[in-house]
Image (cartoon, rainbow, N blue to C red; front, side):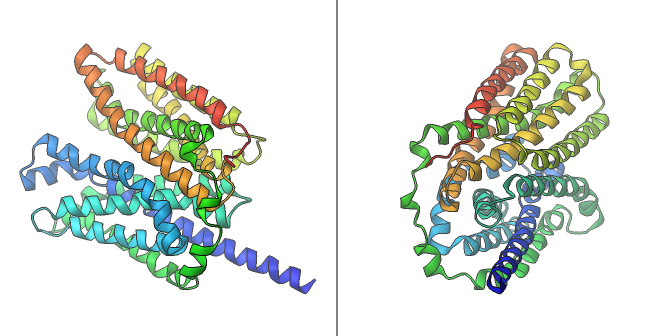
Length: 398
């Protein structure tokens, strides 16, 4: 009886510390790169950049996500999951500080470095949830997704006032986010010291588990992840321009974007709370994907109701993001395999996400209107519906 009680206490303690670690990591997942957007004009003016150079800076983290995500599982196997997460936070903090240094080229190198750090964190966090919170995967995923979204929205709101209030301007305003990574590293340092690299690498080697790259289910999850990411980034990138062409003032469009992000946070929380009650994920994934279809069709047919369609899109996007991240754990047998699926899906997913807004804009320029790109995206959201049903079935890669 005493042994059983001690085991329960140990599990509770492990869950509690892992939960704190998950939230601390989640705080750092988006704010470092989304906070660049509001300062882009100031950065471009200060450094004498063209619009294309400025656009490349905002796209560089997504490129890093696509390129380096597949390397994260191997990084974790060599160091152990806890140490790999801590090392990724170190890369993130170093990148944030480096991009704020007034040295030629530092902003590019720092942005690339923080992109690698966030790419590794994005991939490995679902593996941590799989290992330490196996009975609460959807709830924990929904909560950490909401936290990263809320902190990102806050960061985007405060960077401009901070830049205007300090002599260092945009450099200090971007550099302060290293503090969040350093706090997480300090709190999680004891967690890392308890992990043995040797035991971590010897325990359940990934070779025992089927590679998601060779699995139809792995590709279904990956395509679902990529399409839902593309749908979100297309709407985030182009909604203000669509609204401006409808006569919506820029200030009002900015408010709509903030509301879009806030509703997405609420949707993530709701999805996490509800998902574990379902026998599988098909119904929720399909319903949320149909909301995305409706948002794009609505913008094409009745763009004057853009706020309504953006809210519908936010509900769908916030829900599908939690489902996609949860699938990395729900469709695998072990946290090493979850990391491999996460790396695969996020590599392909962010490549699609980076290309989506570019293709959308090119189709707009070619057709000289928004209807064609909106309808084309709606068709891709229908493909997402098919992937939602396939990936949502209750099974594992094996």
